[in-house]
Length: 175
Figure 1 (tube, rainbow, N blue to C red):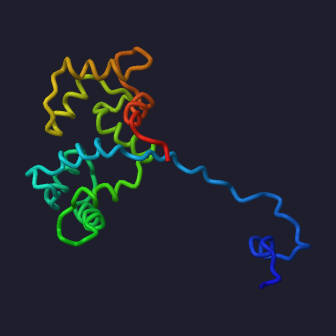
Figure 2 (figure 1 turned 90 degrees about the vertical axis):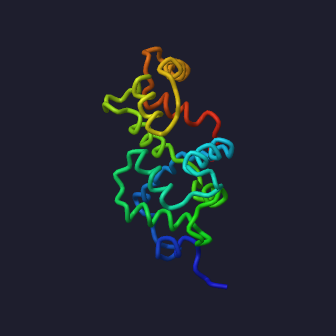
Figure 3 (figure 1 turned 90 degrees about the horizontal axis):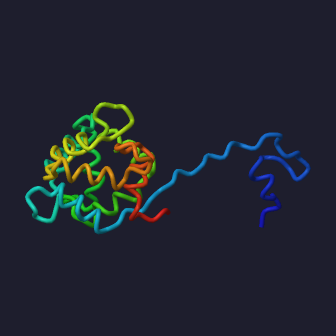
């Protein structure tokens, strides 16, 4: 067994060496939420346009485009290939779930920007209906107003980023 202590290993010194005056900065770990499998099934089904139980590269690229990503097609293709772990050219639900690996609060805040069409930091019912229609959802303006009221904690008639994070993580478990 080695005669080196943990101290000498960590700081490269001997037991007699002094402790560094400043400790290395501790990076806070991002809050990660585990997605609900039922909700992820609904997302998967939205990507799976032809309802064959798997997502083709074309379906994946189309979904990324609809979500407003400015990611280059080559990067989207690389992401698809990374998710397609069995290499069959399709992403099944198990591969889709494995790729999620939890959702970071920062990712949810980025998703907020997709819905905040005018960039004012608030989502209105009108913005919500417009984005949902782009995603292929049938939703009336009145139904979207109800959704906004349900998430609007401060009563201003709109959803801010904190309310959005709360809405999106209600059914998720913090990891």
